[in-house]
Image (tube, rainbow over all chains, first blue to last red; front, side):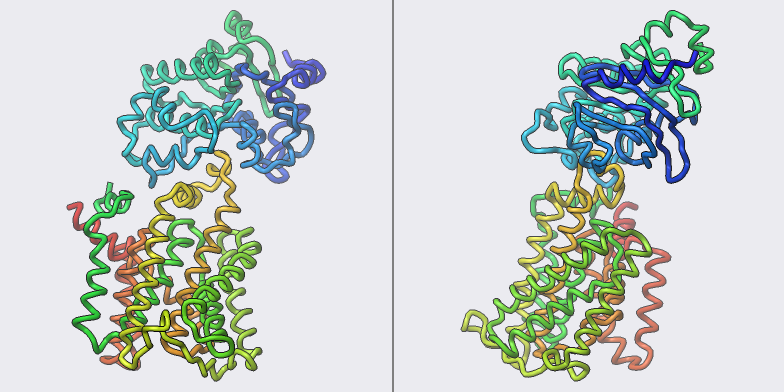
Length: 247
Length: 318
């Protein structure tokens, strides 16, 4: 079941988007990820799956620069980013949508988007409102007055305002009504197809994530135990259940 | 959304924003005997406004803001005593001196957070106070800096014994500073400060250069505090070591808490209440007036955590 580090490393090196090579990282002295290698090509999609506490959020935090990197290399668009500070990584094109959305409650929708805006990029508030029309009507509402679905749309919109070429989403569908989930998935498809965004989707809803992403990585206790096509897991429920405990 | 927050969220000027200025103009005509106190209040409003930018908007908890007030006061005072009594150039010099000290100290202080940051802000103030004490040959040391001769503003408006010119001078400077601060907090930069205050990690993740922005607002705030200090030096023609004291730093925080932190107008309300209460209570209870200030603070913190403006918000929402 466990894939060899060598085969993943090769894939990671080939990736022209994001590439992690033998990464060990954690919080201070505590190591959460061990020898993780994976890659996401430009415009590609990757689902990151695994049980609770296996290191999925830590993986994203490591890409963003919020953890202690103990070993390994991380490259984005062919450039090593291990020494870059979090805001520099964001400016390089890594957008992040956190699990708790973390909308600024004292700012309204317009302002939540504006704080992330960068001059001379293709993303404007109006383009975000085109993607999520329901946000446009709430543009004067404060962040803490939005529903969970609206907050998630705003969190995605805020990440887009930074003009990313890679979007990291940490369980964006958690706790949302099915109709909102459909809206968000449709928006992510649009971002991928129309904008060519690479998307890494960390998700507990394994089937949704696998249906969305071309490739999947399964983590277990901080290590990659599966790295391959999403379709393989969808077609083999027993294997999926063995890897992440659901069918 | 809170009524007052709704008001403040608007970028366009609203009629009610004229209120503090109408009061200030009315004071000039109605309370002519209190203009020296009025000038002190206007100076403290400007000082509190400068603190609100870092404490209220950017979330930098500091107890050392008197450092910049004191640097501005000494810069303007020394300039007036030894170089020129021209007041406006003195203000500019004070702003620059305080900004430089703010920027330099911010480079160190803003690398830290929480209690460490608080201690460092206190340490910077202590260092400057002791430096001013030791450099008595230029600052006057414990005796204070005297011998300033402030020339008429624009060569026309002489500082008079009744404090009329001083009052209008302070009012004009405060108005310009308020216009600047208002524009700043409603700009994208100002909104990003709120983002930093509410979630620093998130601001990092959306590509905001957090430390650079904090240093920028810290420097701007220091410059405004320096202008407030310069106004005090020019209108009283005296600078004592107390301008760099911990008490002044503490008092300005109390004023802001009274009015309401992070609301722009909290500085106006808080400084006004504090200074008038201090004046009146000191007459009634010369030895114990601070007790009543303390009691008022306890009551406000217990029952109106957003200060007086927060209390008004709550009442209007009922």
